[in-house]
Image (tube, rainbow, N blue to C red; front, top):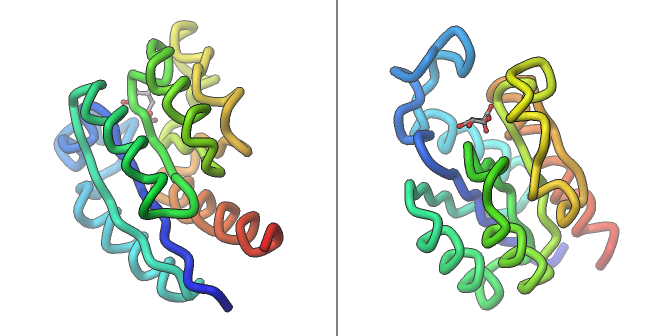
Length: 149
Ligand code: DQA
């Protein structure tokens, strides 16, 4: 099987996981989520590099740089999901297969969270399963990439 490298991109406030509204986002920290992603990636015989930023431009730069380094993107864009045309355009520009994930079910929450700028440029979205959203999203992305090749 050809080696696959995935970029896991975490947007604003996700560095606060564990502290942040645990009733909504759970009690795992971001580093614990990243560790689980690494374990899952290794089961899938893929590698994963995780990156978090609170800054929209840094996330855009990281998406551009992914073109040289990774075959797919797993993204939880946090609040930028609902606001950022720039992130959407960056994903469209690199044209790397992208899966959008959310810990919470964004459609059961406030109306402003119901719209995603990322979904139209993603292969698919997984929302509402806590850390499982990330793990399921990674499985779906790797499966998609392997089917393509
Ligand atoms: C989130 C949902 C977003 O609406 C919110 O702004 C986040 C986290 C989630 O993982 O459930 O920061 O993306």
